[in-house]
Length: 416
Image 1 (cartoon, rainbow, N blue to C red):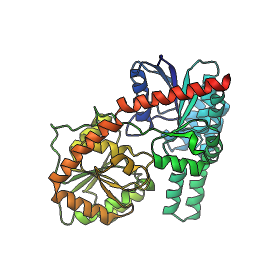
Image 2 (cartoon, rainbow, N blue to C red):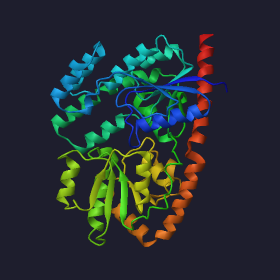
Image 3 (cartoon, helix red, strand yellow):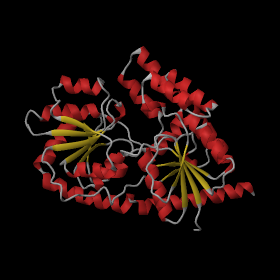
C-alpha cells in the first residue's frame, strides 16, 4: 500500500491514563510505523505524540480544566480572535452542557477546508462538522461505545429530580450524535458488544459498523521482574464517582476481606471527587488507610503499579472495550473482571469472570486467588500470550490499514 496522508481528529486527548489521548498517540504511531504520514488535530488537553507526528492544536477554551466561574470567564476574555464557537462553548457550559464535541467538529471542518488528506479518522466526536468532512474526504468514525450507556447508568444511581435534570442537560450532545451516526458511512467499533449497542442506540445499520479491537502497547504493559508484587495489594482503574466503573463493589469487597487480611490494600488509578460519593463511602466503611488513589501516571508508571500488585479488578458495569482489562492481562497479573459487554471478548478464558454489581463475588474470587495463587499466575502468563497474539499494535495496525484501503476505494468509487 502506498504511503498515505492521514489526519486523526480527537476533540480532547488527555495524555495520561488509558483514555483518548493514549489511543490517539498509539494509533498515530502504529500508522506511522506502517509508512504513512500522520497528523493529529486535537482539542485541549493535547496528546503527547511522537516527534515524527505533527499535532495541529484546535484552540478550544478547555473550560473543564477548572470549575471556577471566574477562571472560565478569564479563559474566554483572554483568548485572541474569539469565534462563534468560543461564545457557544462558554454559554453552553454555563448552562450545564458539554459542548466540546460540537464546537470541535466546527473547528475541524474549518481546518480541513483547504487541506489535502487521503483519509480522516475521527475519534468519536460524532459532530455535525464531521458530516461535511465526510463529503470531501474518506472518513472513518471511531465509536468506542455509545455514550447513551454512560447516561443510562448514571440515571440508575439517583432518582433526584435536580440530579436527573442536570445529567440530561450535560448529555444533551447525544441528540447531535444520534442525528449524525446514521449518516456516517464507515463506523469502527472495538467490540461486537459495542457494535450491537451502537446499532441499537444510534439507529445505525449493522453493515456500516466494522469491528477492530483496540490494541495494547505490550512493550510497555509487561511484567517488571525488578518490582516484587505485594501479596495483598489489589489494583483497579476507575474514574471515581462515575457509576459505570462499579468501584463501589470493589470497595465493599475490600471492607469484608480486610477483617481477615489486615495487610490488604486497594490501589485505585484515578481520583475521587473531593467530598463526593466515593470519599464518603470510604469514610463510612472506615477504609481510609486501606484505599489510596493515584493519578496522572504515564503508561510506564501504570504498568509498574500493576507489577507491584498481586491481583487486578475491573468491576465495570459497562465497557465499550475495556483498556484496564487488556492492560492488566498484558502485565501478566491475575485478573477479576465483570462478565459484561466487551470484557469476555478480551479475556477469553484467562480471567476470573464475575457478575456485575456483586461485591460478594469479588470477595470470593479474591479469596480463591489468594489460596491458589500459583494456579492463577499460570493463567495470567497465558493471558499475556493471548494479548500479544491478538491485541498488539503490530496486529491491530494492519487491520486499520486494511479498513482504510476499503474506505478510500469506496469514496473514490462514489466520486466517479
